[in-house]
Image (cartoon, one colour):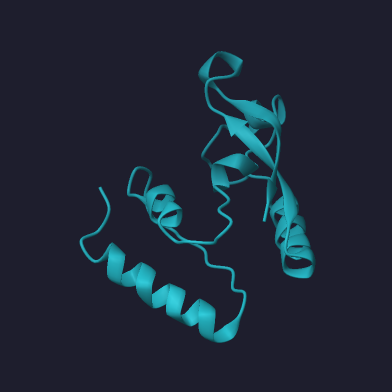
Length: 112
């Protein structure tokens, strides 16, 4: 469930975005708290979920999804660098239904 003041937060962020150009905003909150919903409500932004940066199988299986070390942080750095430099980047898509429910990467998507 999104926070009651989500609309005000979105409007405040959008005003700052217009005033100073491009920004990268990270949202950190517990699973199911509305991070994806909130990012979907901000017009004109590219959204990347940390879930999409889980390591591919079998590396993920060794790390156990969700625990420290289960995300490809060097890839995150590359995606952010590409996005800052070019205004676009390619990012993996993670599908939690693959590998018997353990999840795996499935394809790529373009962030713009």
